[in-house]
Image (tube, rainbow, N blue to C red; front, side):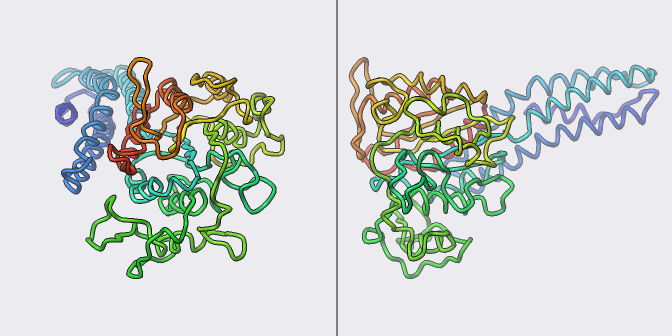
Length: 432
């Protein structure tokens, strides 16, 4: 591999007249190379520990991405390093200083290349009752994402723009773009990031019916330590396993619900229209201390008092990555307080609206499996009763922003594996 050759070059003995400077330069350059070696070693360990599943593809993709992105930096470092004269040739102090300056610039470029990508992630989850199987798969596979080296801040809202679904008249978490959860923003520096994400998704954005959920008295978990349920007792968590009441009790035990309420409260089930793009816009507006004018468009419920109500999520130098999870199409039309005029699959009004924030925004969708050939479109599965226009709008948004669109169902119309969705999200972020 390339880094092996470069490591060998950088370990060669120098013979410059100012040997101490040359040695220090060699040490500095070696440090940069070791970062890449460490990255590959970690990837190889992951491959060995999870052979036969997704890691082979994942690690290959990660290696290719880093290798391609950093090729220029490594080649420049090698050229810079080899420019120092060898045995018997004296280097002036000015020459050494100039070369060191060149190498410092290259090392910084390499450090920037290998630094974890900085992203602010927003999940917009369909909080209706038809999404329990898909939410189960999300919970089972979330650790795949949280094991990655990504600098993230992550929050969740739902696609509901109704402020009347919950316990109170004013908007609650998950309504009109407001983030859900007692700790709404999860950060890569949080020691309990995976637990908090799953709690926010399951306990605040999910709609569960306790009468339809299995009971597993053998489940062992404690607040903050809630392993994914192995409901069939085979020692492995797979798509065959179901979320149990005991697992949700564990996950939600410290959720600050109104007195007497729990994770199966009907107030947590979102109803009505699914305005994924409008909810995304409102979440962005709430995250801004100085919301752009589009936040108060003619159909919008936005109030100036909402500014900053999604604080602590949006950073000035981040890329915003939106992940919409739904079994329905988008309904962000003017008739129901959205920006789309009539029934159109063109997301341009929201592309224009997102551009007003001045952040790079990438939208990915895990949505209904719609297959289109020429002008004919058919659903492979349509568990949520989606419209072709609304789904095509989401597809077009993902394509226009450089995101991905993955089917939320399998060929048999069951919930697709969120393991592959989380892996696709990690690859997307690493290639930004």
